[in-house]
Length: 291
Figure 1: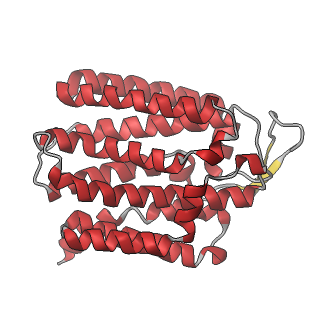
Figure 2: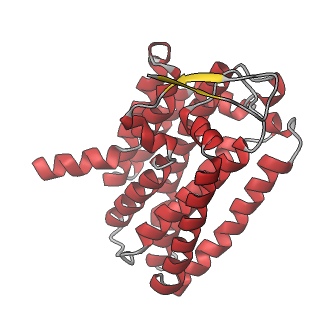
Figure 3: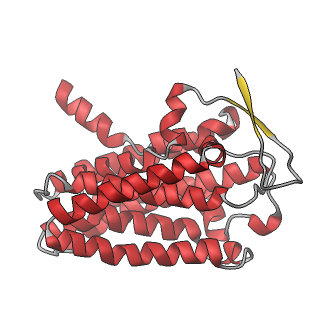
């Protein structure tokens, strides 16, 4: 079944027709993939370095990541569409902007209550400090001139902030000892950077957007050299073997296979599959349970 979504903000693109998302695309449309990925890797990291987390820290992390992604999509879809095609998540928020705003407000309230009442003070303070970096990112990407998009590595910035948020509570729980977390942080940053770059470039190519909105050179390099990036993750995993490193190798291989088979994959499935490649901790836990 098909439905029509009228892009009212742009007169140059009167309407965009897409297939209604199948049920398994709804997690992507609702921006749930990113918080699930953050929670999975935070839990795996804590187990790998033998750190006990506050039981509510994964909940707070998931809510914070979910809120950030929803707000980002809301800001994006408050502006006119820039191409002839948009991914399901943007179409969802463009056609349900008010509902998305209500959801963001509800998540913000739940996150605030969780942070004040249930988190350790050090974790709450660290989250507030990191929120300044997120605010700076939003200011750059949404308020700076469009030509800056080509000049600065947006996807690398997202990957770095995502890693800091995912690793923060574990770092504090480990007595602020950074050494055991350096290689895992580098592995995870490379995975997130590759994931963001693949999605950004392939969706941009499908959207027919203007050259001024084109992805930056760093993202293009990552996509072209994805085999090299996957190899780097494998080398890092060899230097510090652990469950976390094993999951990193599986995810790197998954992203590499996705890149090799890009032309056989429908564009609307690129984002869900790229995010699914980061679900490797689930595979490890399943294998450990069976074995």
